[in-house]
Amino acid sequence: MLVGTAGASINEEVPTAIIASLVKDVVDGIEFARGGVNTTWGSVRAAMGHPQPFKLDYVSIGNQECWMLYYRGNYQKFYSAIKAAYPDINIISSCDKSTISASNPADLYDVHVYASSANMFSRTSMFDNTPRSGPKAIVSEYAVTGNDAGKGTLVAALAEAAFLVGLEKNSDVVEMASCAPLFVNDNDRKWSPDAIVFNSWQHYGCPNYWMLHFFKDSSGATFHPTTMQVSNYDQMVASAITWQSPKDKSTYLKIKVLPFCSSKFQSENSADQPYYKTKMTKH
Image 1 (spheres, one colour):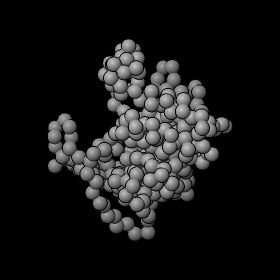
Image 2: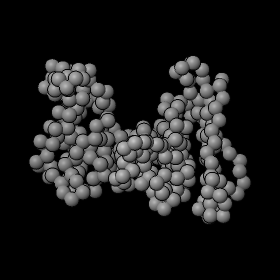
Image 3: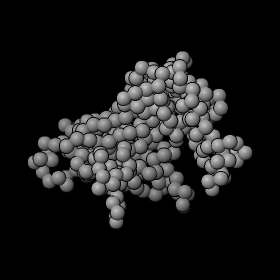
Image 4: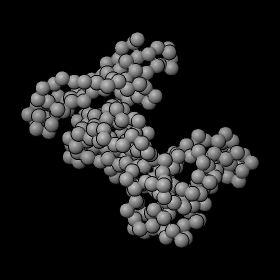
């Protein structure tokens, strides 16, 4: 995926009337990634030691600028130019699904989710009622933030896992997802939590990084509906998937069960009470 400028930053933006040079930059960037060695920018890539084209299937226009004055006009310029040169590339809009139409087209729309752990856990059903037709979502940024996130906590990872179970269930309307941010220098933190921490002599994964390992087989798997019968307790989600292992070609069943502890429960019990359980069986 390439994320290109929409001609906007937090404090300023480029009017649509003079956006052409930035549009050309993005189209040239795609050629640098995908073009043959005989193209202008593909030859530059080859000269840098990478003659084989990169796989590039998605281009995102901007990042969170839908509300800005010139974004939609600029976006349409980028969309038209990219589709004319690379009709197979999927273009991602920073605007939500309700704004996408024949006059403002998009292949996908970008969603960012930042919330407390309790709120994130509740968002396991966020896409349950999304219309099944039209462009899919890409959740390009999600993270538990706030006091219960710390520098990476178990309860935050559990809440994010519940959210991802919801994305598994709604994979027909959600194309992909990525946590935010991925890396942080422990000596130069601008944001917490992060999935992977490093400094000059070590690196380690936070709980939300290790949690993601439970979802590594989800892409391309078959999702099976689940039913739970638990009285007087609504803070539990589960998922069941089957997938074929590329190593032994066997089909496996993975069941994930996620009970969530509220902050009140945690204050009255050990901080280690929340847990994430997965079971795999070979078929």
